[in-house]
Image (cartoon, one colour):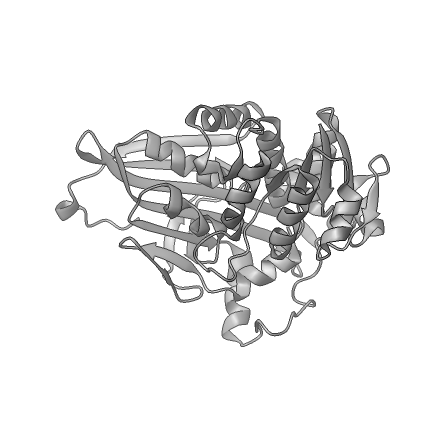
Length: 386
């Protein structure tokens, strides 16, 4: 398949390499081709493309069968229109909840993709993406889902802030108000609010998590019936953002690039490690879904562990844990891309057989994915907190 990747940074660059190894004809576009080549290497072509310019994307991607949008999610609608112009399939890994803060903007393109008989697979990364698949799998295993809790962990052992993924995305995450779904209704919540303790897979263990803006809220309640959904993040990265917010250093009107440095290239990561400025970084995800099975309350707890920066380095890779997890998961989505469908699909809206194949393939690639199922006491007796 001929694939054009828009945005060749830490995630897009690694994803492009993975797709090329799978035998696809891959080329890229980025606003800074010289910097992009540090992520891509010398073998893949990369043109200068302004992702905010529809016709620039169309010219660079002409002839592709599939357009992969790995650029910041603020350009999603432009990239979707470009894919329609090209009559190409489409994939992205994030949502930009703007005009409608509680519904993914990509879903508005469903009718146009159906008319072109093309498929748009959205939010097809790790979080969102894998997290959506796990919620959908939980819904398959019970009669009714009542509550979903998504918990993420991001930490960096470094002397100074080091962006493990898009610095634009980190800024948006820090300044956006968290969205929650409570009692069957969407609403905004307090930034960095509702702290709790959650146990992640070892070696992370117990960590404090707080509410954060995440993209799963824009699709999951629209496709899977539930009453509660919230997403919280823990680790020293979110702790740093919370501290800056309390100090008044995070304001949406200005982009403090000094506090949100650009994601380091592989060579820069190597230098940071060699100089002792960067020791390690970790990323983990968990999904807890509570529902009713055979008339009794039940809890499905999925724990996902990904290679740390140290483990990736030992494999000869200098990708950050989040970029690695997102690129690997997106590559699996692309391997099983449902070209026979037409319209816009988040992961949870895919056919059940395809969702199960995606999870099986991720396990075969070494993803550490554990499921624990336990019965819960009746609601009136359940006084334990998550």
